[in-house]
Length: 203
Image (cartoon, rainbow, N blue to C red; front, side, top):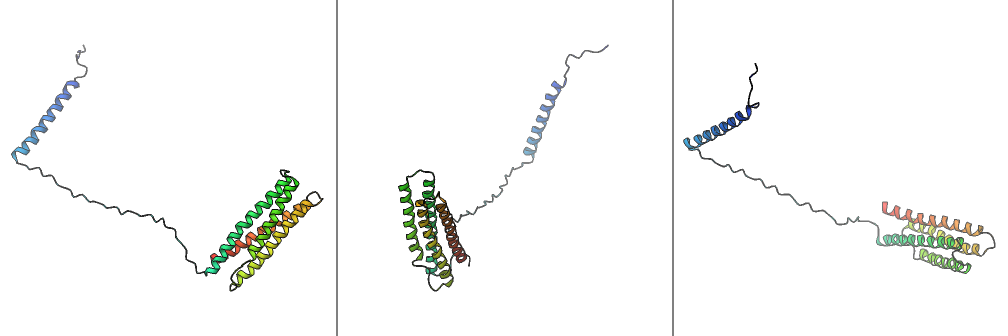
């Protein structure tokens, strides 16, 4: 016959007793050791190393590259850069005037005025490019400058041809051919300036 156990988990009583016994034994042992042996507890001071971080200063200054080019050479290159900007602006104005007429957003007289204004700008641009020119002692600049003068005169002639095309009785063929020539000559002019500046700065 099976005996009935009133407490199905007898460990519930035994475990706390074991824990109490362990705590008491540990306390008694430590107390006895420190009392009988006159132990002095020495706290060892561990030196703390202070690591100083060197502050990294970020250099935000702009690095300038020294150039061996003479001042008059550099001044000429600056002139060319300014002329490149002017050429780009002239190209935008010519294209806008032509588009305005193609889109019929202006009257015939307004279109003639816009085309005429571009002729005046191109004529002034010829003078700007021609004078004063590069320093005579640099043969390479003198040669390339002659090419620029030829191109800028072609650009001016193209603006004249654009107005002639506007006034022509054809259906726009003359004006279209003039615009195509203008764009080609303007592109060559800008590329020539870029070549001169690039060759000077790379050497």
